[in-house]
Image 1 (cartoon, chains in turn blue, brown):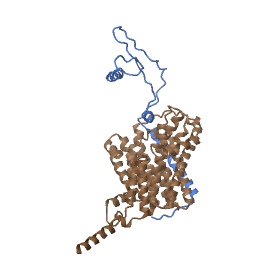
Image 2 (cartoon, rainbow over the protein chains, first blue to last red; image 1 turned 90 degrees about the vertical axis):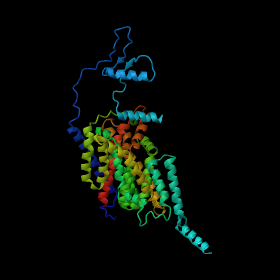
Image 3 (cartoon, one colour; image 1 turned 135 degrees about the vertical axis):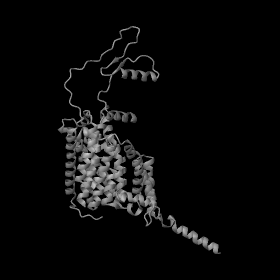
Image 4 (cartoon, each protein chain N blue to C red; image 1 turned 120 degrees about the vertical axis):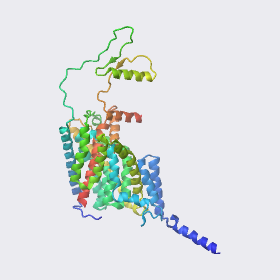
Length: 121
Length: 377
């Protein structure tokens, strides 16, 4: 198929093309912002909350029972039970001493990056 | 005596119909090239999924008297139609869309600019190609190698310079596999240690609404603006919609596994079939391979320079290393950003940040291809 180009000057082709590419992608930036703006499912910004409570140690009231694990606030007893069961299933005896979230900002991407690094080691 | 005569005539007929009778030195060289590419694909693991079928197609294309491209229909001719009529590249994009997570881009849309900046490599190579004597259509097809996007390179060269398809595809896929070797020295050369150590802020959560609406809205916008790439972009976004809708898991699974695998075999083999001795053994091929490298290096440098600019304007919030991921090569280029960043500061995870410019590069390359098609028609 033979074309008759508008111009054959490489500099002009570059200038026109780069301008169009930037305009289209900048327009996409604003489209993405618009989608975020009209998103009815987005979380409303949370009101300021009081300073977070420090880690709470759940003390055992009875000397006959094993000491309860130190649990970070926000972790449900069901999660503790699942972790304890998983630890036991791997053959470790004894009691879970403490449970806390090490990575508060974890995302699947972060996990993927860590996994990628582990694979290379 | 008659039997001997018949035997002799038959033997001569078999010889005349065989490939050996018409075998040329060029065919021999191209079969060696095919074997070298097979070695690179299967032993060195340079993009084996595509380079493997390309290499084997190259070997097949150089057997004389096969009738692959004769009057009668046959499987190789049918595969070739998939390339000639631009069927395979959009189908590959369908699978890529189904495999791509646009969340990093939606969480930080400004990284689209890095995908745009990295397209400079395309036009540096275009200028270089015209300087060494290619016409504007050939130069545009060669330049798009710098977009580091195989399907778009094949798509554009089929439309603008079909006779260069084999060399362009081999250069594009070879350099894409060499991204981990080509990019790091440029990244280190163009950034300071302090810049490489920048830890970027965690990305916000992207809602399902955003992930579903984006492919629809961007398809409408880009296809209306640049109709020549509606098939490419439309398939990319349709695949992504299958992934994100949450109700088309079977279609998403087919697009990102069975379909893309089947089309990859056909696309690779068909591209290899264009590498006959007559079309490949020319000085142009060496020039294209050289210009492809210039395009890749230019794209990497363009992305990094814009990354540095964004770093300055955001008060150090952007690590310039993610700029190099603006050349497509998904997800290889993003991984390279991650590795170089991690070497500079262990524990600095740039992968999710680099995926934004990386997928922006796919869109940017398609837009650049569409603009060139619109201009050069």
